[in-house]
Length: 323
Ligand code: F6P
Image 1 (tube, protein in one colour):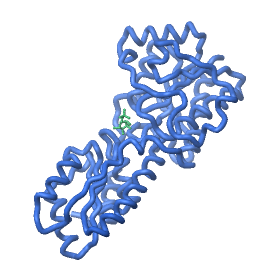
Image 2: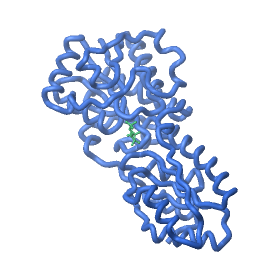
Image 3: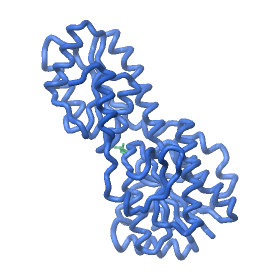
Image 4: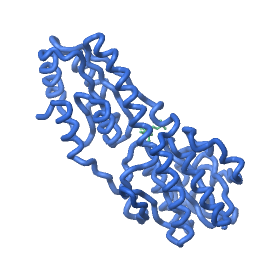
């Protein structure tokens, strides 16, 4: 059997470790493996390259993706999908492993409907994929954001300021909320539980009057009130902290994966190949505690992964800023 593997969408730390696990598991079954370059677009452009053990060395601890990643509009349309399915068939490929976030898993499902035996592996720093507790990359991204919060706090304390740290996550507040909890932030501003700017200002005033030396707000990029708007709002008000803003940006999607992400990648990479070997294409592999599971792509695509409201309450309790 000839297996193809690709990484697509926003890059996530641990993608290399996932490709390695897919390939090693496939080799253990006596399969051949090819990498598709730069995501789904690479199928249409016939950019397939054989993966052997020599290409896998020194890879699992590295961030980024050696295969390259991309977002292809063409595979979202019927004609492009059919062409992609045909290209894979012409290459003699019997199975495809797609490593990526929601958009990539949507394309995996569509390719499945066009006749491709595809299995998905969730990899996104947004952790917004349903059917799995964790996606590859989010653990590293949280660590990166927390590193930024820790460093910024030093500045905020010294200048007696408020500091807004904007983190990625697209429409999901997961990355921001977990970073706020781990970073001991005073406020988490996330799309799922919006806080009025007036209320944040009230928290700031109370903290200022209490003589608190600093005030850290973690803001998700997807929050309706943007980090920039919040900064302006705070700075227009008088008698409280001055607010600075740092956007953590793309350093969250790069960086070398934590051991948690490497282990997750190892588990999911191997599980994806097992799913194909057992004729369970059309699924995504995910984790629930110690268990590795298969979830039909139908139950993943177009669905939401709700944020645990208890975690939001916990963030408020820890910050002593509950309503
Ligand atoms: O979906 C993953 C993600 O990293 C988001 O958190 C972020 O909004 C987006 O992708 C960034 O995309 P790009 O790297 O193409 O700018």
